[in-house]
Amino acid sequence: MAPHHPPPMPDLTPPGAEPGVEVLHLSDDRITFMLWNVDMSVANSLRRVMMAEVPTLAIDLVEMKENTTCLHDEYIAHRLGMIPLRSETANQFNYSRDCTCAEACPRCSVKFSLDVKCEEAHRRNITSKDLVSEHPDVVPSDADGSADDLGGIVVVKMGRGQELKIEAVARKGIGKEHAKFNPTGTVAMQSDGEIELNDEALSSLPLDKIYEFVNTPTDDPPGNCPAKVLVYNDISRTIEVNAAAVDEEKAKDMNFFDKMAYFAEWWNDYNQLKDKTAPDLIRVRDRPSRFILCVETTGVMPPALIVKVAIDVLREKVNQLQREVAKGVEEDAMGASYGGADAMMMQF
Image 1 (cartoon, helix red, strand yellow):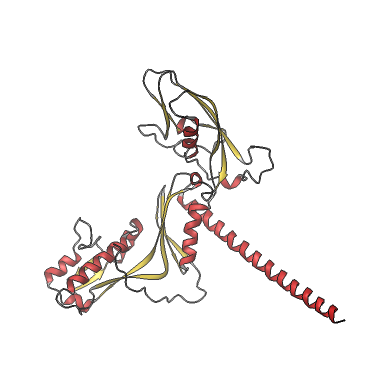
Image 2: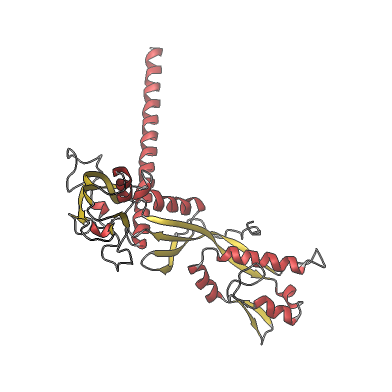
């Protein structure tokens, strides 16, 4: 069951405030960043564009020259299509539907080949590392990384004497057309939160309960604080929110504020066991116009590049909408003027 969230804080964003962004965490396969001064619809539009409309390259056509393995041609072709290909240069390619070539050319496609025959007595794995690309920058995403025990993404396992020979073509596309073009493993979004403490109510707790309140055991909520975000100040004898710990936790855990909400709900219920009218000890409220997004890449491009390309795509969509609206207004104005002229002609 989802935790109870109190009503969000009032939106104090001044009209016309410029949107902002702050990167909270960045690694080779994940980026976590915060947006502020934006509406939820804008943040969610960016999330959807990152998943479905960032162009990438993927194998789209497979021609089987020889296949004596245990898998059917269609099964192998599907596996090849789902192999992530490095797509940093995807914007340099045309969509095949927009290209002027007859079938495939270097402007809209990249050719791959695979030719392997098992001569060993033991079983051999055919993996993404066996694919040979004609483009130096468009290769399987694990081609330049350290190989695991299987040596890449396994396509098929073949026995002695079996052979697989194919020619394939990679084309440009977006995730809205097929899942193989999706550059992200997941894109999560959550409202930024604010932890509010009721100092007066907390001061009435026994000292042992105060230490239990701020303690951070290793197990999960609801009864325990999920991180060292609450500290007891022995000098002022008050409980305080550790802002640095909050920033650290929300950068690495998208469920942090949900966990804090469970924690708050548990302690508020405990405080109201004897007196149902007792005030809440702690509240976790959403901060309007502030959103945290976490993007995990499939390896086709760096996560920061996915965000940048998605922003460019979203900006172009808005510009296209503005052009279409202006065009519609202009056509309506011309229609009205023509209608007025026709009416005048009829009077004469």
